[in-house]
Image 1 (cartoon, rainbow, N blue to C red):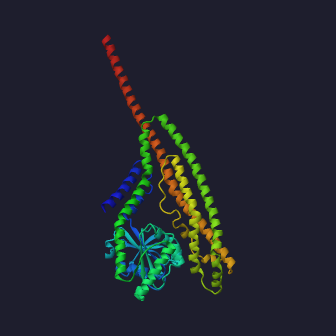
Image 2: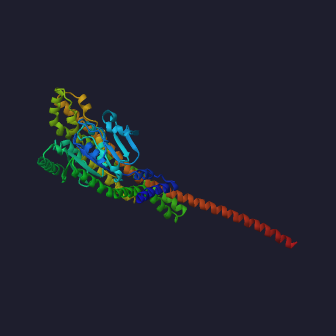
Image 3: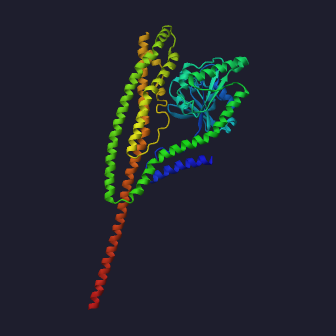
Length: 503
């Protein structure tokens, strides 16, 4: 805890130094608050009705999450050791609630984006620095709408994947979701639930089949731990205890990254002030004029890069939409048949369209964003200004965030397969365009803000040095004026004395 406090103190001290020198503290003060409450999320993921909430309840030692045969988990619910109580995120605002809201589930949680609960549960007391997140079933409408689930999964430091022995298959929607996560670089534990419903030999065969499916479809080589049972519960607790040891190191690495990125303009400012102290006023003026010209040139170069990137993203989104029509064409006919039969096609279509959106975004939009980031780093290098690497995946949850399901596409389209295919193409094109531009704006801000921040700090260092020199010159002039006045007075006095002697 002492080292954690030292990290927050360093961020706060850097923020205070920025303010002391008249520089904006950027996100340093907010970073200090976030790092004080930093936790590594462990996301419990799986398809609908695999027993995720029941597993979390056993881990917590209390019936906190609602468990039923309906799609009760309406939004991700993150639980950790603390006394903050339960808060619900609705319309981008956190509002206080009661633990009974999580236990009741269902309509009481309708419309929320996420829940978090800081509770003094004995089972969590030894897991400081971690949180456990129960999640909606992947492939359900709750999981498909909005980007909260994918955002949580992407920032998770580890994963517990839950599979039900009664449905031992890695579904297409589950595989598409998991393929977006860094399973190869973060700890993963796989649990096989509902094993008490089958003979032990059948459980072994089901586990072997799922292990082979995970290796083939996702390249994930993992052993499934049968649950319920002491072996699985012990494996989960051991898994979390090992993560808790790593949580401190992960937190320190993230804190150091934020500190280095946030304090870069201050370092530039102080370095420049020291160098400027050796320059005279004419040299400072020339240097300020040169910096103004460089800033003007940089503005034009960045503007050109931004316009080019936006155009490329728009073109790529159009190409991806056309390609998505070919990809989704086999789905159009069954969807038309479902509509004709009076069935809701959305549960079937949502997962397929979302999978196409993610695949097209990564294959067509991500290379453009990567090229833009490399170009910005090269441009900054020409000016001798280091840029921090953009944190995380630039696409993150943007494409998922703009996808709200296929219901609107079906309501506005015809009932035949061709009309449905065109509607799905229009939907994917719009989502890819909006998501790509949102991802670009986020990346643009992450790169240009530190770039212009460093240039602004250099400019301020020049101006502050000039003001300091002017103040010194004024003080020297005032001191010289005083000396001259005193000398004149002295001469007057000595002149009067000389005249008296002559008389």
